[in-house]
Amino acid sequence: MTPGARVAAAIAVLDQIIEGAAAEQALTAWARGSRYAGSKDRAAVRDHVFDVLRARRSLGDGDGRSLMQRLSMREGWSVDALFSGEGHAPAPLSEDEHAALSQDLELSAAARCDLPEWLWPRWQQSLGVEAEAAAIAQQGRAEVFLRVNQRRGTVDAAVRQLSQDEISTVPHPTVRGCLRVTENPRRVKTSAAYLNGLVELQDAASQFAIGAVPVADGARVLDYCAGGGGKALGFADLRNAEIFAHDIDPRRMRDLPARAERAGVQIATLETAALAERGPYDVVFCDAPCSGAGTWRRTPDAKWRLTADRLVALMQSQDEVLAGAAPLVKQGGVLAYATCSVLHDENSGAIDRFLQRNTGWVKSEQYQLLPDLNGDGFFFSLLRHK
Image (cartoon, rainbow, N blue to C red; front, top):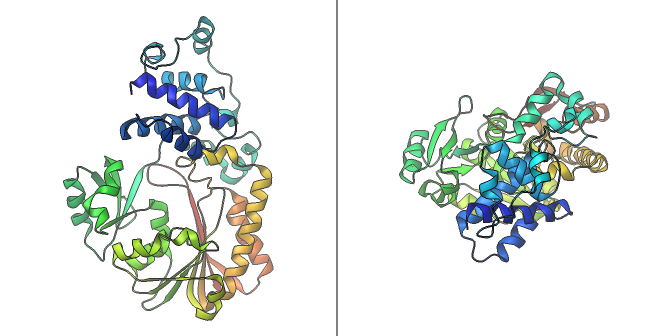
């Protein structure tokens, strides 16, 4: 595909998303109907679509064609070359389109920061002076981070082995055992270091949270909302502990046994009915369902799908997660609550609601990480029995 044809494909996918299709669904449908598109073409179209979705409002919030025109201008690409009408490229720009592109957009503060208008006051209340910087940080692509499985080898060994597959990395400045990929991130999953379990894909903020949870040798640790099991794997790689994983939907954990085998660790997966029977646990880690407001660089579609009603429903789920997890903690143990959000209502607000209802607990530590070069936005709090 020519660069112009890739832009035309992105326009078609964006129009479907604007009409209500989920981004992944629209991209998958396009790829299945475009067998001629190679892997580089699919990656390029995906990048175009996600680059627009991250900055949809600041690019004018129009249709797919106008959004791709604005993105091309922002990136310094030749709009006329991409919109040439040749080789399946989009039709050339009209005089009205040229005139529109020559004019600066009049944007509200929320639009400039690429947030829904209804969310902007909550965002400001949550982040204060950091509100604008945290929002603008999510207009660009997220960095790719790797966790080195120190049961398999050292950080230096991981760097050397990744370099053999032409993947360049640098150590994270503050998170031990974490690497940031600087070249060829798409090669990670086919690299020898990944396939032999030496490295695992995991954001730096999640790695920081795992390292901050106190886990004694021989402790029993439950990843209560495990999903794919990334945090359970992190605990197993780093700690000499007995690790359990649970999710309300066990299908989300279907890849965990293979991932654990690749990492050389043992993780017991538990159904909900077995949790109390196998408990209590020294540590229960709750990575609760949330808006994902700290990871919208990776899932920008979620930013535009979030509504006020959906946020209220998520807050109720977070309250239920804490209420369900607390009785599983051993007396004197640790209840860790985490989200990949930066919104007060989902984070310290959830902790405050829990403590108001449960007087036997005390907050010992709390962290709010914001999205930047060194990781995603992430919140976690450690609670202990009084």
